[in-house]
Length: 247
Image 1 (cartoon, rainbow, N blue to C red):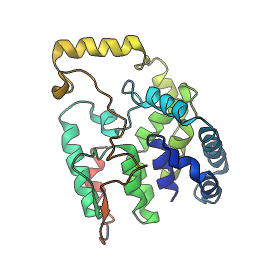
Image 2 (image 1 turned 180 degrees about the horizontal axis):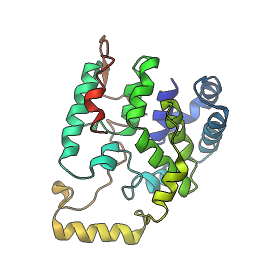
Image 3 (image 1 turned 180 degrees about the vertical axis):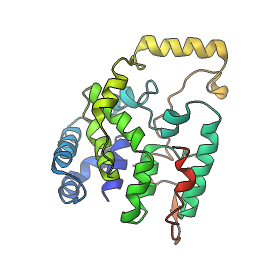
Image 4 (image 1 turned 90 degrees about the vertical axis):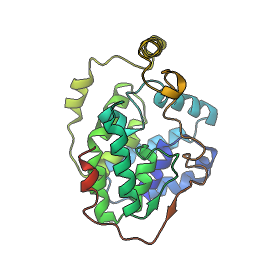
């Protein structure tokens, strides 16, 4: 259940979240896999976010995850960028979803972090850490970048990292990203538009211009019913090794 909670808070904010505040806080308090400091951070995040006006929360979410690529919620983008390898990696991941009994709509991007967490939540508890370890380096990077911006969303990604069971030295990551320039400023976004207009790269459908890549479509939004169906299938305990090389 904790992974589904994290999935919903990483997804686009919805009114439904406000209806279950007490349940969320109880779930965090009773999660034995989390250290107390992580529980405190996550509980504080939930309290703060569910005390916000929804439109203000959504506006901040847009600014964080829809501008620039450094906080992209599509994790293969952090690994493969716009290379062709990303397409094959997504095909492989979809195959692993199917092996585990999860069918997703063809319009959904399998590397969307909330969807991946929903998938991991369907796996046996003793297998969940392995799947989370496959993306731990990306979760650590997102955690560090959010900490650098002093944004409390870092608590959610730090929780995913804690559930993976991997000890990551965030100080080293902070050193690596210390000189990173923000890619969500007006100047940075304008530069991307100019460069892609010249190269005709990026999104071919939109003439090479960047688009809002991270906001989930109506199909992806966890606040509505996803076109996902679970079948009675037993996941192969070694199946995630097939996609590990892509992560």
